[in-house]
Length: 72
Image 1 (cartoon, rainbow, N blue to C red):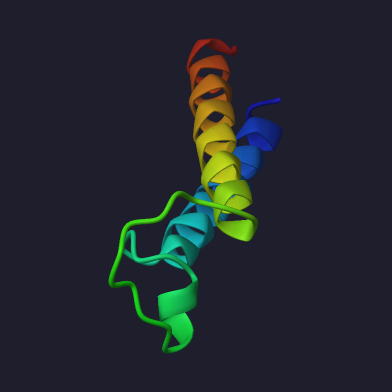
Image 2 (image 1 turned 180 degrees about the vertical axis):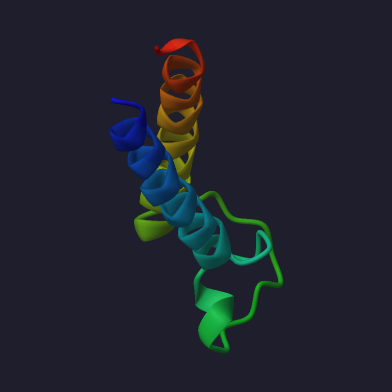
Protein backbone atom coordinates (compact mmCIF):
# COMPACT_ATOMS: atom_id res chain seq x y z
CA UNK A 1 0.00 0.00 0.00
CA UNK A 2 2.77 2.43 0.91
CA UNK A 3 4.59 1.68 -2.34
CA UNK A 4 1.51 2.53 -4.40
CA UNK A 5 0.99 5.77 -2.47
CA UNK A 6 4.64 6.68 -2.92
CA UNK A 7 4.41 6.04 -6.66
CA UNK A 8 1.28 8.21 -6.87
CA UNK A 9 3.13 10.98 -5.00
CA UNK A 10 6.06 10.80 -7.42
CA UNK A 11 3.79 10.98 -10.47
CA UNK A 12 1.84 13.89 -8.97
CA UNK A 13 5.00 15.79 -8.07
CA UNK A 14 6.31 15.50 -11.63
CA UNK A 15 2.93 16.63 -12.97
CA UNK A 16 2.90 19.63 -10.61
CA UNK A 17 6.39 20.69 -11.73
CA UNK A 18 5.34 20.44 -15.39
CA UNK A 19 2.15 22.42 -14.76
CA UNK A 20 4.08 25.17 -12.97
CA UNK A 21 6.72 25.38 -15.70
CA UNK A 22 4.04 25.61 -18.40
CA UNK A 23 2.45 28.57 -16.63
CA UNK A 24 5.59 30.62 -17.26
CA UNK A 25 6.04 33.31 -14.59
CA UNK A 26 2.53 34.71 -14.84
CA UNK A 27 3.11 36.09 -18.32
CA UNK A 28 0.72 33.68 -19.99
CA UNK A 29 1.31 31.03 -22.57
CA UNK A 30 1.27 33.53 -25.45
CA UNK A 31 4.49 35.20 -24.35
CA UNK A 32 6.30 31.86 -24.26
CA UNK A 33 6.34 31.92 -28.06
CA UNK A 34 7.09 35.60 -28.61
CA UNK A 35 3.75 37.25 -27.90
CA UNK A 36 3.71 40.44 -25.88
CA UNK A 37 2.20 40.75 -22.43
CA UNK A 38 1.84 44.50 -22.22
CA UNK A 39 -1.56 44.55 -20.53
CA UNK A 40 -3.30 42.56 -17.84
CA UNK A 41 -5.75 39.89 -18.96
CA UNK A 42 -7.74 37.25 -17.18
CA UNK A 43 -6.79 33.66 -17.74
CA UNK A 44 -8.72 32.04 -20.55
CA UNK A 45 -8.73 28.78 -22.40
CA UNK A 46 -5.75 26.53 -21.85
CA UNK A 47 -4.20 28.87 -19.25
CA UNK A 48 -7.27 28.49 -17.07
CA UNK A 49 -7.23 24.71 -17.50
CA UNK A 50 -3.54 24.54 -16.54
CA UNK A 51 -4.15 26.72 -13.48
CA UNK A 52 -7.04 24.56 -12.28
CA UNK A 53 -5.12 21.36 -13.06
CA UNK A 54 -2.21 22.62 -10.97
CA UNK A 55 -4.47 23.42 -8.02
CA UNK A 56 -6.24 20.06 -8.21
CA UNK A 57 -2.94 18.17 -8.48
CA UNK A 58 -1.58 20.00 -5.41
CA UNK A 59 -4.68 19.17 -3.35
CA UNK A 60 -4.54 15.51 -4.40
CA UNK A 61 -0.80 15.42 -3.63
CA UNK A 62 -1.49 16.80 -0.14
CA UNK A 63 -4.26 14.27 0.53
CA UNK A 64 -2.18 11.32 -0.71
CA UNK A 65 0.75 12.52 1.42
CA UNK A 66 -1.45 12.60 4.52
CA UNK A 67 -2.80 9.13 3.76
CA UNK A 68 0.75 7.87 3.26
CA UNK A 69 1.79 9.43 6.57
CA UNK A 70 -0.90 7.66 8.56
CA UNK A 71 -1.00 4.36 6.61
CA UNK A 72 0.51 1.31 8.21
